[in-house]
Amino acid sequence: MRLNPLLTQLSTYPTVALDEKKRQVRATGRTLYDFGVGDPIEPTPPHIREAMLAAIPEVSQYPTVQGPRALREAIAAYMARRFGVTLDPATQILPTSGSKEAVFHLPLAFIDPAAPDRTVVFPDPGYPAYSRGALFAGAETHCQRLEGDFLQRPWEIPEDVLRRTRMLWINSPHNPTGAVMSLAHLAQIHALCRRHDILLVADECYADVYDDAPPPSLLQVSDEGVLVIHSCSKRSGMTGYRSGFVAGDPRAVAAYRTLRVNPGVAPTDMTNAAAAAAWADDAHADARRALLRRKKAVFLDLFQELGLELVGSEATFYLWVRAPEGHDEQSYALALLEHGIVVSPGTFFGVSDAGAGYVRVAMVPPLEACREAAAIWRTVHREVT
Ligand SMILES: Cc1ncc(COP(=O)(O)O)c(C=O)c1O
Image 1 (cartoon, rainbow, N blue to C red):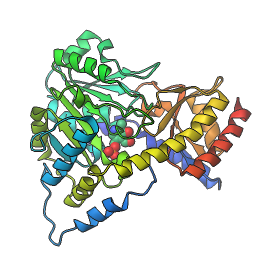
Image 2 (image 1 turned 180 degrees about the vertical axis):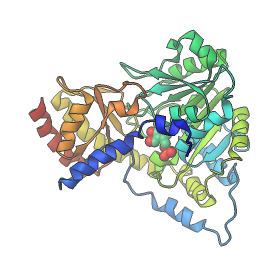
Image 3 (image 1 turned 135 degrees about the vertical axis):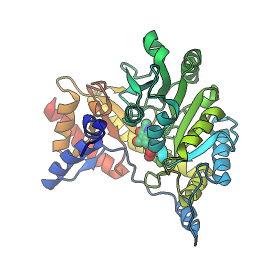
């Protein structure tokens, strides 16, 4: 059988590799403290679950691509409350089946696979779906390597690459590092993209998961040539619902709506009802943020005591930690894993080896388990350094 060669060329999805290693350690009977995969375990708030149940209809028909007006109004109201931006629910918002699906499908609407200028730029390390969606859409890809403070500075991309670029991904707050771009930084990227006629797409799915200062949205700069992506997954504990949205420039939203008529990936109306309840409420997101901050505090204290260096980490529920002297990301992660603590080696998130020397710690286990794991971590660290 002939296959799309991309299926075999793309390496195993990073979480699959992590799962295999975890299985081996679990087989030894050890308790696993899983700070690897970024899938939170806090319950979905009851009013969101009830909204979904109440929306199960007697007769179920196809959902529309644009989704119910009530959901788009709830999203517009959220964007106004949270970022002070005004969006037209009729022309500037589209619900999606989570943000991953949107990340994957977007290049299909904006990339001409036959054109010489079909490059898609994305951060490296970064969320793997940026490159995968671009490749399946027939784009050329350019990964922008992040270092130091791990903030993406697209003005450092070579001029000839920028001339061929049609789409540029940014991700703030950033997975895996938790680094946040300021409004001035976003404005500088936007100005660059306008000069080169590049569609600027900001993945803002961690916008409500932060420590102190609420991260800004690119839409506070402008909606011209801009799309932003948001998600119920991390804000509301809804990874299993598959619900997010794309918003921004009405011309880009219209093009994306045209594309989305084709694959049949519109969220169900039950999901849309749950999402409307989620976007209409901030209290549950505030409570989740407070809990995640308490989990982070456990590790911030530990890392300070052990002299481990953190970069970024001011938002998301990830901590981006430099492996200690004498270790790389693999050897440090392996030492922890042998004692039941699962963290992700930074190279899991890179197309290149960007992320080398760091591990990502996702605040997934319950608070008490975080405290237990921190005690084990302290012992392991002292043994191996
Ligand atoms: C940066 C980033 N974007 C998008 C996603 C996809 O999230 P979802 O599809 O659950 O909205 C994730 C998930 O971890 C992520 O880290």
